[in-house]
Length: 257
Ligand SMILES: [Zn+2]
Image 1 (cartoon, rainbow, N blue to C red):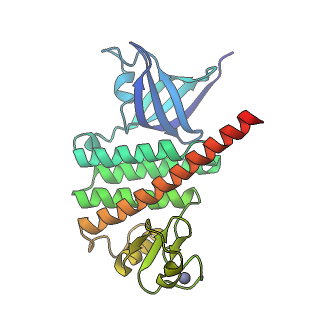
Image 2 (spheres, rainbow, N blue to C red):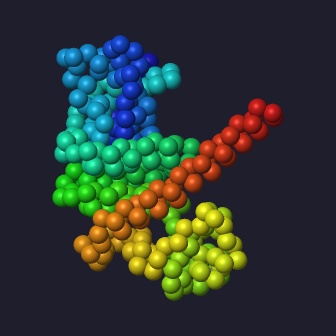
């Protein structure tokens, strides 16, 4: 007998399966990352079509399938329509979707994290939808990057040097091999890929790891926020590459075993 289950899920992306049906990639509150079939969603009169759009959060019922589950019912909780009407809001929200899709595979995010991650995506989309300018959009995306890394256990410590353990008094230097370093330790571990974070940027990022809203939120300008966002993006990309390499190694090991 087929089993049904209900959950809340937020759509990250969708793509066609055939002429009538689509596949939706979503992040759910109880099962984490899900790929599900939306039957008939591509037909013009389908009610499901609007509900499987990117960024929409739904109350959904799914039928368990052999390979993929099928959406039986969907009721939207929030369509985040303001995201879709603004190019910046859309780009940064898509980035968040991609980040979750590439980083939160169920193999490495724990089920106790699912609800926290779901809430973080939902709240971030809500904040991006109501952001008044581009700076606020990027700031919300930056806060998402920092929070999701913390939840998944990859959070960066911007305050203490990972080698000498001392408080970083001035500029901090990020190294892919040793994490965050003080200037003295970084001299020993020089690498052309090192990224220097000046004192102000380091302090701002450090505040963001501790508080939802910081005293700098209003003071910083778009250039600084963008710079921090790009730094976090680079850090996350490096981790993703490392993870991909680990998977490749694992595959080779399994094949040869
Ligand atoms: Zn040090």
